[in-house]
Image (cartoon, helix red, strand yellow):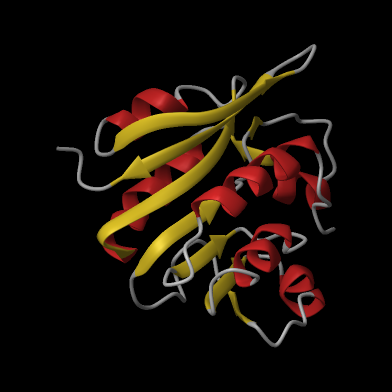
Length: 175
């Protein structure tokens, strides 16, 4: 199952359009439908899309985008000026089918994948590199986790009946 663009994707896409520079080397982690990678590639000539799901990689046939199948940074080499991540961020729901859980569930609390991503991401950022991270009010303690090692600024938020979603800009190291 490929996670199709929804409200969270569209909110992040607005910020991607504002934040990507033509000189950026961009990585779209957890690309899903590829909406962020496609948007970034319209501005940057060096865009890479990564996803654990081979179905996502196979469907993203775009000559402007390099695609890599990888569990987070496992198969990713190099450093990037901008890393975009719209992760699976919901807490585990035992009733959710396994194929959709791959696209939506971020762990027991919802923040475990984000936490692992943030540990690994710092090794793949350039000196002035930044991260655009989308997360939810349902994603556990994402903000606390991010602020441990990164400077952190919320760039956008949107409220729904059951949750609030945020796009934050992070920089390493936290000075």
